[in-house]
Image (cartoon, rainbow, N blue to C red; front, side):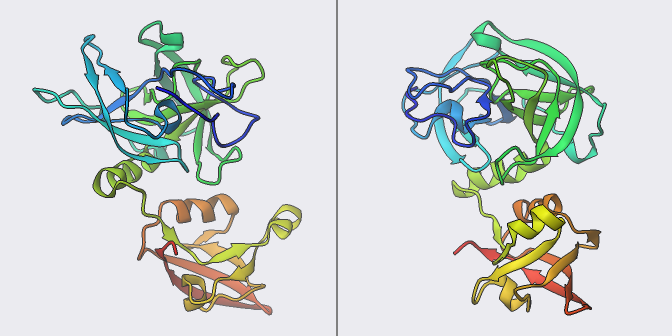
Length: 288
């Protein structure tokens, strides 16, 4: 599969497949059978965005041609579909929100195309962003190398908790910092891609002052889009968000609520405006 561009997020990070050249002739990655009728989830950077020449090799050695059902470059996820004469064994999905630092996880991988193998590690952190505003990564020290993009990260019961996506590395190989997209993010994205061919996210209609966030760690609104959900919720420039859905505000929390929202989702804000606290409800809409 021809790929004409390197991994899109940040030059500081290597994709697990090692897209560190301006052009490569073919790509190799892993995938997970998400639904028994032939839907497979993998990383978008493994397959690119054209359907020609994608071959899936199942665990029994059977090879099938696959077509792209949908891709989401923001989260680097893609859904493929293969036709099969019988139902396939799909993976059981766990709630990644229940993961705790120190939990044991297993990475099911295909390092360097050598064949399926398993590495064990722990959850080192959750909620990692790493220069991708759509991310909410699980960080693990399970050994992840080239050829592992799109592979499964499992809990100790063998249930899917994430899709292996990135490594942070100076050498291009595993250095104990692997990143996986959590299962709670994956399910909604995959279902959108299957149903609509794209991911439908909610739109908040306001912007946060990055300087104030960096210096004072406050969520201060810097701009409200005219006619957008923020304006309809009566948010104003200069408002400081102090809670989101009854939780103490933080940028990771704001992003999580945005990333998991759909058009029509209700988000409750408590804001500080001229020394007064106001409770507001925002109804997300489709991106303009």
